[in-house]
Length: 142
Ligand SMILES: [Zn+2]
Image (cartoon, helix red, strand yellow):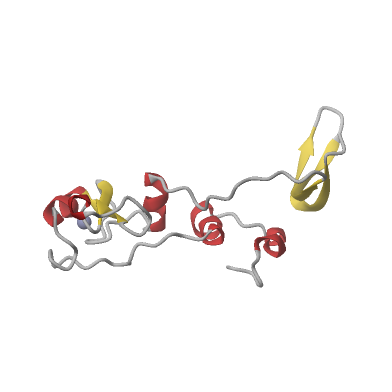
């Protein structure tokens, strides 16, 4: 319908209709600008687990995971990327209303907000090399 043009296509996949075969686009340019407000990577339980490699940030287990407020909520800790860490239920209850320092439970990694590029690379596992010029990456990120 002439709403978009194909800029790059897959070398391995095609789209098929009953009678025709079309190239599978990997990059398209829309003819009309569509404003999508960018809110960054969605903060969800699953995305925090992914950021933390699905491991408790205190003991490293991958069993029975929940979210821990690093600075406890009861002490003003916020519910955000920088204050939430994956923890197993055991560590979470052991830590209780203490900070990691007070509980003598060091974090394996300080919580952080992932960038969108990092999210694509590490979380979805799919970054088409053809996208790199459009994602602001100067070089291949693998
Ligand atoms: Zn643990």
